[in-house]
Image (cartoon, rainbow, N blue to C red; front, side, top):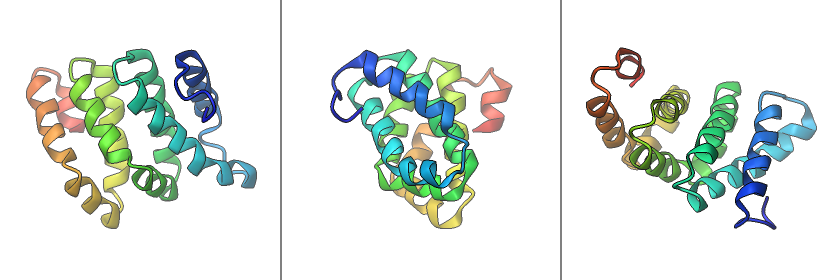
Length: 144
């Protein structure tokens, strides 16, 4: 994914592949997760307006965030807060993307040390915007 950072199709396929292995905890996969998370976040930043890529990236990050706190740390270390905030702003009208991003934030925020990074990154403002935009969607408001 690094060598073809500007190739949309390559990035989308890479994200899908990573998502397929996101919940595995073998030693080989654990060593690759930080790099995989970095690649996903870079792709999210490079192709901000591509909903399909954003949705797949969010799915993969959500699987990783839900699997372990160490993956949440990797998301934060790789500037995931800015990617999450940006995606929330750009895809505010897409409830599928919004739900996944809200759940990623949930998993990160369950670790007290990591919650501070979310607040410092301004994610709480984006969450309030989501709640306002989707006020009639009880599930999104509840998750928010």
